[in-house]
Amino acid sequence: PKGITGVFVLRNLTDVEAIKLKAAESRQAVVLGGGLIGLKAAMAMASAGLKTTVIIRSKHVLSQMIDYDAAQILDRILYQNEVDVMYETQVSEILAENNDVIGVKTTKGDIVDCQVLIAAKGVQPNTQLTDPAGIEKRWGIVTDGHMQTSIENIYAAGDVAEAYDIALDDYCVNALWTTAVQQGEVAGANMVGKENVYSGAVGMNSLNVCNISLISFGVTDPKKKTGYKIQVKNQPESNVYKKVVIGKDNRLKGMILLGRINNAGVLLSLLLKKMDVSAFREELLSDYFNYGTLLKYGGESELRKHY
Image (cartoon, rainbow, N blue to C red; front, side):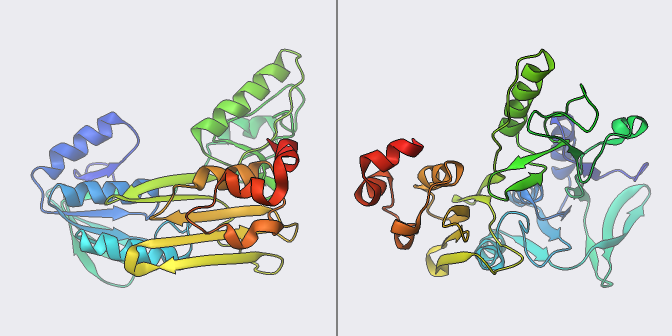
């Protein structure tokens, strides 16, 4: 809120520098949001010696990236590193004294003291520019295979654009830098008369929490389980969680790798190439699954069809 010091967003280097200065003279921090930015901010505050609380509306952290079981491992790691998480709640009021933040009140009536409050949630595409033109939009600006909008000769790319997602086999916003570059190249080519078709991308993210690596991509926790084959290896005592989601077409749709991520690249390539994995489905969660496994089951000729 305007006029209250100690309340921050985290969008650029200026924000970071201001947070560091305030944290150096503070004892407690509250972070709103349990996504990638929220967790990174929380770990930074805890590493700086502040008692840190993360407040989230969902049932677990990284709810857009991983499932509940994987989140339980992260939750324990966060707790061991002095980060507390309050689930299924929101902030109803920011408490201030002499224009300095001193805490927050939650929708459950709890008071959490803090001198640093970081808001890291609620990101959405800024599509207002298109309103006067009447360009079609849902969550983002709707585009076709050429990255053209609903109005001829107007194109969109990047975080604001809804484009084809390979794992979902549908159109959505994938707010990734690499995706924005690919879409921009396609849009730019078509704008100058050189036809180019966008082949699609897949939502993916990675994170390192206290030296525990995490990678996920595609459909990681399908709302409707019908039509999916889900395989899981859950070893919480070792901080290891591996999950693959396979569609009814026997193609990989998504994955979570926590703790052991060494074969993430080969698994991602299976999804992007839309390769049938039925022959080696039981081996996908093995720590030793690699391109050699594909050779064993499909032979060199089968690999050449996709690679």
